[in-house]
Length: 282
Ligand code: DGT
Ligand code: MG
Ligand code: MG
Ligand code: MG
Ligand code: MG
Image (spheres, rainbow, N blue to C red):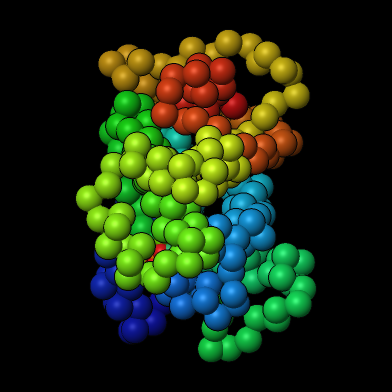
């Protein structure tokens, strides 16, 4: 760009670089999906095709951005996680969030007709997503964030499953079902489902109970054990890694299969079995 007398306006742009060496989570959420899901008649409380479409779009985001190491989705939201050593876009907040939101939205819309062939997308009911980035300072807090989303999934799904069973199978009005569920705990809802409707909540689909976790699986079934660095140890920041090493890691990640799973991510087991997610290598 040639120098001109207008160029000073560039100095109005503010830096928005996220703190180095912290986990970055970009969470996106469907805008007005309450209305959108009504309009396109999503099944209540869970529409399998709508969830599969969310997951398909998220897989494409993972494939396009090899820097992502894990993602978790439930309902109309998805959390995408960048490792502390991520240097993508120099860790600029705006670049990271807008790239994820627009890439996700593009694939969601592109894939819509595959999942809902009989319900064409038409304005004004076009899906869009908002997004935000939050940084977390260590592995423990990142895992607590992921646990928070999965617990939310469980609580909402148990409530919604009970509510819609009372309404759709029990013939109750929305207000009556809501009234009866007020102040109930999990055990009460399980009991309503089982005693009144013969439904064992444990037998509901895992995708509804646990949400969806996406991660990379490497060809070696048992990858060489890479110890997740303890938070106290001096961390390897990617800018300290050689460029060739960064390229190598990116290549391995690109080649890896992105797995769609519906499993517990609160307990240690998930993370211990897949140490590369927290270690960021590869
Ligand atoms: P927002 O995010 O503030 O723009 O507003 P909403 O309406 O997107 O609200 P949010 O994100 O808190 O809640 C998600 C809505 O999406 C909720 O009303 C239920 C709906 N939704 C998500 N997945 C499904 C589904 O599988 N089936 C049905 N029927 N509705 C769903
Ligand atoms: Mg929202
Ligand atoms: Mg929403
Ligand atoms: Mg939501
Ligand atoms: Mg450009």
